[in-house]
Length: 169
Length: 181
Image (spheres, rainbow over the protein chains, first blue to last red):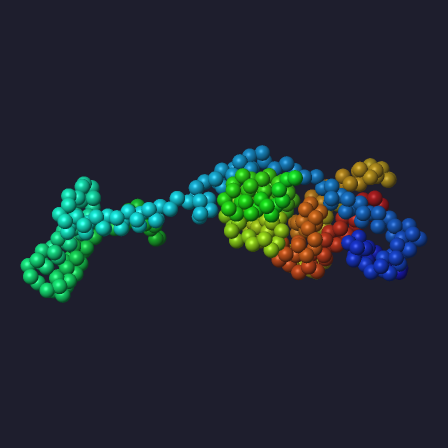
């Protein structure tokens, strides 16, 4: 192995990527050639320099800043969140069941449930009244559908506050 | 015996914030230094480090553990560095010898410099290397990643990683040779 070849393969030698035979030939050359030996020592020093490249200290507030955001409820894993949606759905069904029962058995409906469910209860009472007037159930169903649609149109309100709707430019 | 990264990751995935904090304390200095060496700015390095750990926390459910946690973490950090240095990707993929040269070193005071002085000289030269060389050398020697792991982190071929590391070391010893002659 000559000097040119040794210089070309020195990097692979440092990474331990030469075959045993090539490594032996290179080592023999290094033992005899002072210039290549100096180059090898230089490479070893370069590696030592990269290994000892001084680290700078991170800002002392770094961990606290990240952990503050990690601990925010919105950043928590889904399993850890309170089941608000399930609670609301449950309450909705309970309200509907109470509405039906209160209409059938003329139970008092307390404020504000009465205020919230009043229109729906009126609609149900109208349907029941039509049925009691002796109309057959198909007519009641169609009339209830019409009345229900009209009531829904009359009481229509935006489900989301106007301020929460993003405006498009 | 302190818990391994894998054990802490498993706890953090179940929402254990203290386990994640331990992971952060263990790795933040290295992530910060990687970002600092690549970007050359403390404030930007701090932003990248914060964002890296926040993304790691939010993405833990997607970390399946096929790779080491650190490989995954550094991949996030690297992608954030890429956003700030658009030219870095091109330089990493470039396998032709680069045109850039280091600035002329200051003349050394004595004919034969002491070992300590030579190391100090090399440390100043490391700061001056092109950023893609600083990146690969840091991954190789700060955390001891293999060439294959570095290739996975940077999403470049293994041969390209090897070429960059060899060229960077060659550049440094050439500069030292010039400085000493």
